[in-house]
Length: 113
Length: 112
Image 1 (cartoon, rainbow over the protein chains, first blue to last red):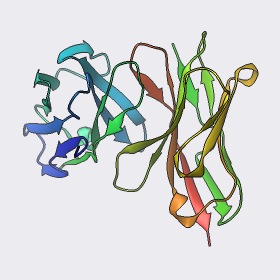
Image 2: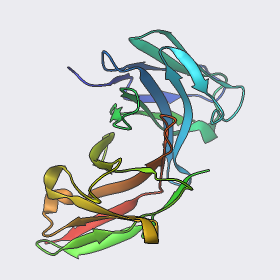
Image 3: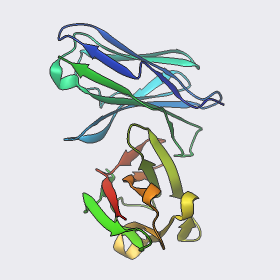
Image 4: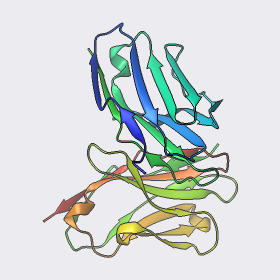
């Protein structure tokens, strides 16, 4: 298995633009998690899905952020409109149920200028 | 709600020396505990996990951790570090609802 695949690896965009981050989880993993990592706040859980259904989105910072999982092999995190304070590394991770053994992707480094 | 504290932001040790990274958790019941490692520019990788049973857990890359309920701790140890161990280490706690909460991390520096 190729692991969790995230794209793009790097994204530079202007304030106000829409940004879409993509994630392909490991086949057979029921859970998918989106995290944001910054120096100031560390790793923050934004949202997670179980069998494509959003379970907990309490970490999504505001309505500008949205996430979807249309099928078991694909998820997106969208920011619209983007702001400079959204600059961070965004990680996707997947896991089998009740394992806690997350497999992380390599992340997307987002810079909003 | 569960939480994790890693009291050391940075730790520096000499190559070949022993290592202990501290982790304290807050949770009312027996937690699920994890250590992850993050190399620069990479995602996090699971080193080891504790669910139940033997309180001394062996992981990959020669790491081990010991669960001490009385101290609410889950410290990570390695008898002899290598330069390749330089990375950031995250302790995490889970409460059985399939999400885990990460600590702020400890960055490990290795002196040659």
